[in-house]
Length: 110
Image 1 (cartoon, rainbow, N blue to C red):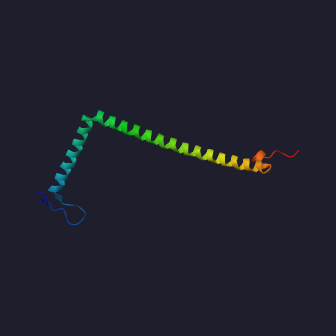
Image 2 (image 1 turned 30 degrees about the vertical axis):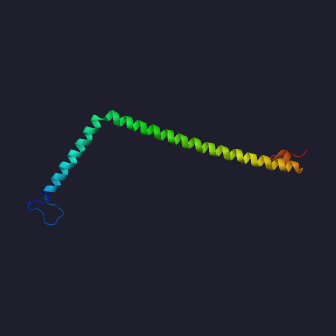
Image 3 (image 1 turned 180 degrees about the horizontal axis):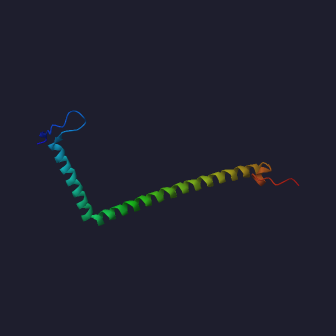
């Protein structure tokens, strides 16, 4: 079925191809596939829309959860840095250093 060809005599190697019956069958197959796809879209558009909306909602929830986790991790890091600096300043205060009382901000000399 796919091997029959029609030669109109115009093919002489100049870039034109001969028409083949299998090309017509492929075109019909593509046309039927597109028609089937359009039919499914028309018939089930509500279901497809619902699935798309649910997928977008799930993606947004996941993205929101990831952003919340990143913010939580950054806040934990900030608190750990603050605790570390407070502990270092406390230890400096116990040793009698001026940095232990004023931290990074020394008052001007009077």
